[in-house]
Image (cartoon, rainbow, N blue to C red; front, side, top):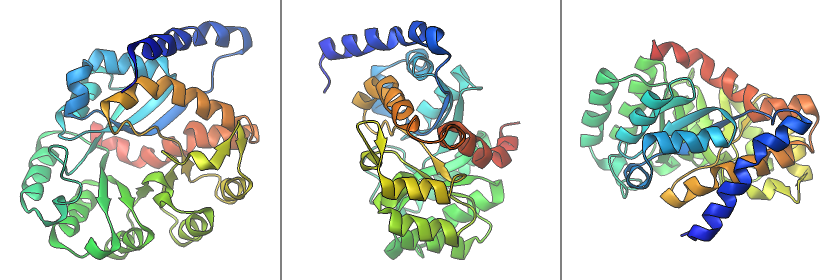
Length: 279
């Protein structure tokens, strides 16, 4: 866990960012597509405190999910213009490996989809060996019925399987599949409605410089790369502003128009067809 001293120091430094930004222009806005506010995080931070951390990071938007869904709904209610709600198939921690064989997950999803408004389903963990099981197939069908983006923590085979079941699906591939550019690129070429987030992909940039293999990928698919933090534990919330500044740093190593696309425009275009679900 981060020490209180380091948290206070980080917070103090982040608090100075707006003043510094005034001198050189406003910081580049970011759309963070990988934020979780699960039940354990909600015990550490109120919805207002969490929203303040997102605002301190200079986020334009955040795609937020949680285990269970109460945290997501609380953040969306507190900041509806900032927080876009995504429905995870998890009600508590520990279900990432069991949900695919648990029929009660479908009861949960159907209930929440009927009662509340969402733009996406996920982030969910699903792999090629699981893609044809009844529970994930029904989840994908529900996403189709409700016109929702799918946020998949998956291998390439599972992504292929999602599109095989629903060719018109729109999929955000979490962590770029934790795979290399020579795998990610062909997947983007194969599926026109596939985007990737770079959460926990720190190897794409070092010392403010973008790795050349990743630079080629970004250039080849300038409209399909997005950024995310992944606050998968409560402690990660202390780093949201720090991660945002690191993201802005390496984005300066790209042409300005490409940097702006990756920072927020790609995510805006990706999510736009699903915003009608919030009305």
